[in-house]
Length: 453
Figure 1 (tube, helix red, strand yellow):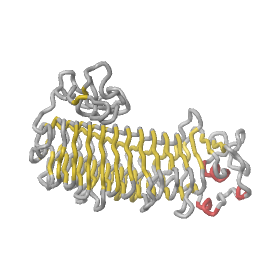
Figure 2: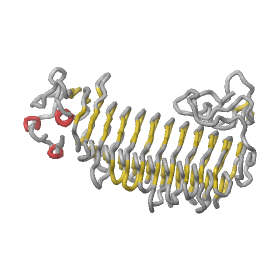
Figure 3: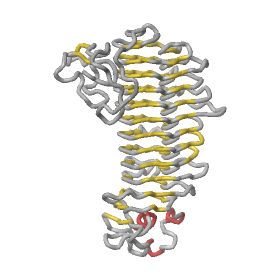
């Protein structure tokens, strides 16, 4: 259902709703039991469509949506608003390939304060040569997306979400099968020099694809935090297009990866960074802590798991890399390709399948200690020391993401002496949120993303 006149403040076919804004704290939308008429929205007299519910709402209201499949698209949100599923409901907003679902629109001079979406499924959005297959958001101080399922959306950039000049927090959400013709198979993000931040927490990004860069996420500018996420089977590039960053492509600013798992992501056609590529022309720093990289692939280019560009700095601590593959003969194929600066500490790099047989490569500088690295890594501490007792594949070992467990006899167990005032063990928790060091054991920390014993 299309509501172009909502942009002028009048809902097509519901002219009576164009009067004074409602004073409702809650607007109810119920496809099965509602009717779109003047005054719909209060409890007991719900609207039947989401478009009518938004038209009935005033700034600061909450629109509560009951079960149903709502065939609607191009819904404008230009005031502070919350749209959420009713308790126990799973409302589906199906754009049917006609356009995106939501335009969330502030201005640089007058940004929206707060917009929240909760508990919705947004599927089959396609704006045709536009940004954001499900959501196109600009200039919002606080855009919060919680428990939202994005499926099979398509756009030029940002197959599911395109956000510009907005602080965006995505929590407990899923992105499946979204595609971008250019950048950001699931998410395209640009801070617009506003010091904005994209935070993704406890979410799954799986099977998304970008024809160019950023199979799941493309960050043009601003800071990114990935906390306890699973990036699975995302891909970038293909055909004659060299896409970079099978899961994440960062062009500038900072990226934090914390307690996240990257598995089976891929770049094709001489692309770089099977899981992550940080190689823009500006300062572009990344910190990876308590995270797992498994079977990511750069088919013909550099960095099976990670590529670090010449102006970039990477700090990798207490993380595990296993069976990542850079099988091509182009550039510097390895698990980690570094043309900038990389510090690798208390981490595992094992089972690499690199064309030149190395775990680390590139023209940059490497430093590090307390590692278990089974191949060459520029002479840093722990290279040419195969890890023992590492699980073959990730599994549910507790915590929000799959991890690679260590056996009690592993040479990565109880290696680093714990000294609480100097914090040699980094953060006090591992990828599973388990204490580091493990309680009741020796005063030593394990190497890698899991504190097993």
